[in-house]
Image 1 (spheres, rainbow, N blue to C red):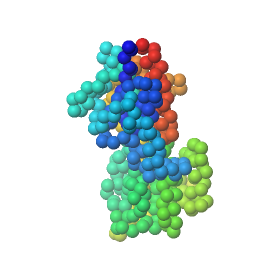
Image 2: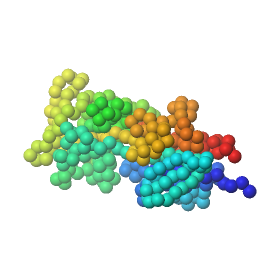
Image 3: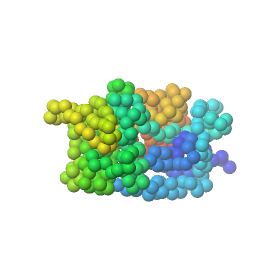
Image 4: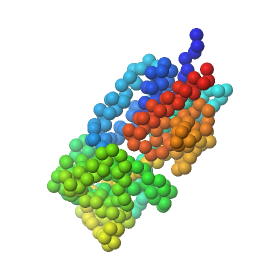
Length: 343
C-alpha cells in the first residue's frame, strides 16, 4: 500500500487554515505548526471586517469548520519554526524547543506583522497617552467603548493613514493596501457609536480598489459626516489636558493646519513577519522588504524557486483577508499537483 503523502504548513492563520483544509480533503496528511497558542492569526485582532462589517468571529468560525477535528490534520501549537530546509527530497522543520518535523512538501503561511508605530516618534505613539494604533482602536471597539485615557468619549477623533507604509524614512515604499479601507471602517464604527462626535481622516490619497469599497467611502461622508483632509501629519504634541495637538498641511487648500483632537488613531501598515524573513532567507527566496518571493507573480505565485516549498497568503505581500483565504486554497492545489508528479 502506498504511503500517504505528508505536508507541513507553517502558520495557522487564514491562509494556513485554508491550505490545510483543502489538502486534507485530498486525503493528504497535514501537520500545522503554529507559534502561538491558538489559530487564526491576525483575524483575532478584528471585531468586524470590511466591506460588509461582518463579525470577524463568525468568519473565523466558518473558516475553521472541518479544520480542528479533521483526522488528516494535526495542529501543533507553541511551535516556532527556526529552521526550514530540504534534505533527501524531504522538508525538515526544526523548532525552537528542539523538535523536528518531516514532510514531502511544505507551505510557508507565516503571515504578517503590523508596523511598530514607535519608529514614528514625531507622531507621539508611546509618548502621548491618547495616540493609539488601529489595532488598539479595534480592541476598544470589540469591547463596545472607545474611550480616552481619562475615561471619556472622544468628542473629536482623527485617523492618520500610511503610518509605516509609503514612507521612505522607515524604508517601506510599498502600499499596505488595507489601511485606507480600515480607516473608513473604523471611522464609521466610531460615528455609529458616538454620532455626536466628529471624525477626521488624514490621507495622501484614498485607495479604495475593491467591490463595495468606494460605496463605503461615500457612505462615511454622506451618512456619517466623516471629514477627509488630504495631507500628512508632520508633528503631534500633548496639551495640558492630555488632548493631542496636530500639525499638518491641507495639500488641497495648500495651507498649514493645526488641530486639537481627543484621540489620534495611527493606521499602521503591514510588514513581513519575522518568521517570514528568516525562513525565506534560509531558502534563498527572500524578496523585497523581507517578504517571501514567489516563482512568478502571474503564473506560479504559490510556488517558490525551491522544489517542494510553497507560499500562501501575506508572507508574499500585503493581501486582504478575502485574497488570503483564496490564496491558501490555491497553494493547496499547487501542492497536490507537485505531489502527484513526485510519486
